[in-house]
Picture 1 (spheres, rainbow, N blue to C red):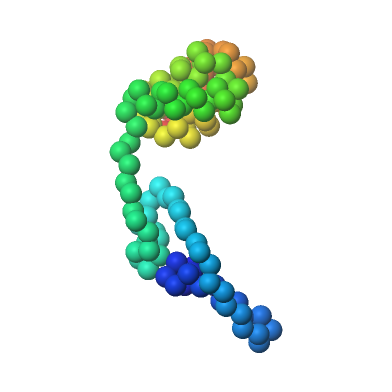
Picture 2: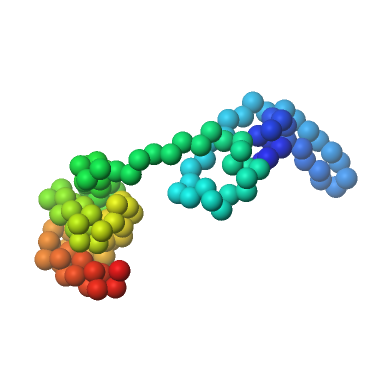
Length: 123
C-alpha cells in the first residue's frame, strides 16, 4: 500500500516471477483516531479533522439513520437521540443505533426509558 501510494506502482512476486504495473489510483481513508496508524502511512494522506456534531446536527443525523436503517418511528428516533445525548452523555450516533437495536417495540418510549435507565447505571 505504501508503495502504491508513493509511486503509483503495484508489484507482484509469485513463484519467482516478477510483475509490476502502474495504476492511476486515489486512496481515501477514514479513521476515528489516527494515533495508532504508522507515521509512514499517515504522511501520505491529507488529514482533515471535523468538529463534533452540535446537538441539532446530532438529532438530525440520528433521526435519519434510525428511521431509514433501523425502521424506528420518527418520534421514538427523536427521543433516542435526545436520551443518548443528554442522559448517556454520548455524541456518537452509533450509540443511538445500539440503543435502538435493544428496543423490541419500535414505538414504545417506556421501553427506551427503561433501557436508558439501566445503561446509565453502568456507563
